[in-house]
Image 1 (cartoon, one colour):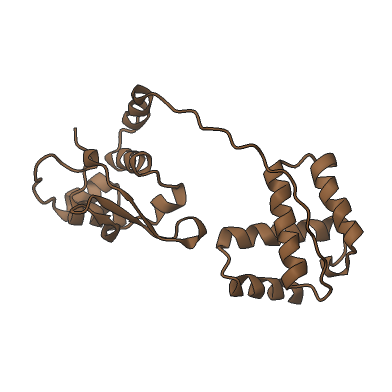
Image 2: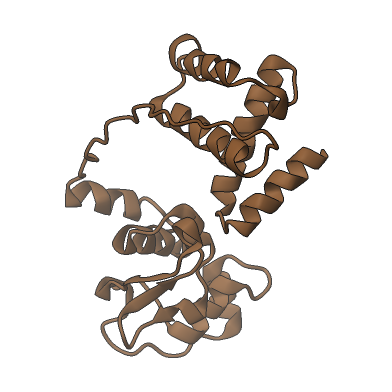
Amino acid sequence: MTELRQKMIRAMELENLSDNTQRRYLAAVTGIAKHYHQSPDQLAKETIEDYLLYLKNDKGSAPNSCASALSGLRFFFNHVAEQKICIEYSLKRKVQKLPTVLPQEDIDNIINAADNLKHRLILMTTYSAGLRSCEVRMLKPEHIESKKMLIKVEKGKGSKERYTLLAKRLLPKSPLPQMSEHAARKVAGEKKTGDFTRLLLSCRLYPAT
């Protein structure tokens, strides 16, 4: 790891940037350095402008990718490079379009296509709570607050915490008998007691039929 890269990582940590933002900013600086085969802190302002135009017009990068590169380079030349270069441009981002809303029947078919209870429960929780894939992976038993009908989301976008709703359909209509640890592991598809097994044992979280 070069000294310049270490310095940039340190600056991003001090600014408390998220891991995803740090990766994007590092990729932006690495990209321009590889393109010119030159240390980025030695580049002139006109050269940086040419690179941004290359991304936009010649390489055909998506608007969001161009904007991400611009943000990364702006951070580098404001907080890392000895020579401060003002990069005050605005690359148009991609127009935000509304997502396609699937009918309830199609959603049920997607969820019911999973034969494994664990996979079906993951799909139901993801859909009903509006969770990102990384948020689902971080879900633990203590995050399920069934009395309040809430799910605590840790390390969401921007490393922020938030609460989202726990769907009634995920809870049994009547109290279920406590599962044995062996039975819970079998349902969870885990050879050893893992997070999903503990979720079944502590929360009794089952899709209602």
